[in-house]
Image 1 (cartoon, rainbow, N blue to C red):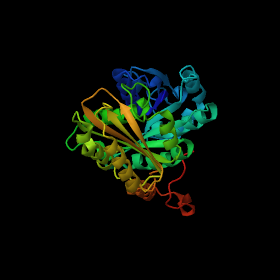
Image 2 (cartoon, helix red, strand yellow):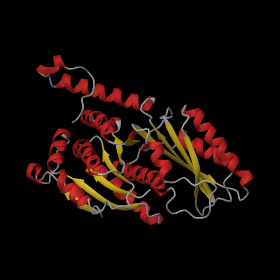
Image 3 (tube, rainbow, N blue to C red):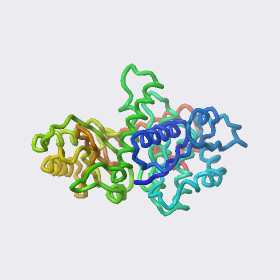
Image 4 (tube, rainbow, N blue to C red):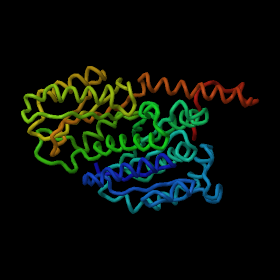
Length: 359
């Protein structure tokens, strides 16, 4: 899938950089171009991408301080500037635009839904979001921001791929080191998803291509992507278990949104040397995924690569009914209640505990 990337806010800019670098290093050519947008100049300076600083008349390059309503306002005011910078990058070759953002911070959570909305108005290609959910330890404000932003983002985007920070930060890891590792893991997953059908080596029996990815994401709502790999024997007959185990691991332990296995649609791509991929294993894995997700829309195919390993890439779409998502949303609702208790509002009597739309 030929894609243009747009990183919004600090986390979005870093993830976009990691994704663009992964694609360039692998030589897939799936990422056509990338742009980073922020209200804080200091967060844009280290990025090796073209950047746009927005909100200068309001915050003078110092960021919005976690205020996602302000983030939405300044992005709405400067959206034309962002679209003008992005326009030369979204050529006729582009098949999708991906907007990446951390949903806890002010610029990402407030600005990403605005840009997704505007992009959908301008372009005919799908506009997907990559949303990073804040961890439990990131504070009440981040939970509230993410709850409101996610509700709006899912409505505006063609599909929203989620990354759960809680699941991917290792115990004892530094904050900076932890986020770098998370970005690398997510870049591999999204990068391979974009590369499907782009720069393959060898001849596959059934190649996963862009149309398969788009048709899977057409289910809309929230999505998750998983990955796992294992050494492969030269004889494909010996790799039946290798293929099925890789697919199971990608779903059970390698998803960007863990435990999100109740899905409306799914796609599984088995990557590796076509001569080593077991057809029987691929078919068994596909049937298992159908049973595990409860979906009748399970697509599958190969991703030919020159490798002595077999890898599984799994995309699940329509995972909003999963326990992991509900647990996060309940955390966000509780954060809203806690915030209202700390700051009494005379209008609170007319509100309920549901998360309000950001826009």
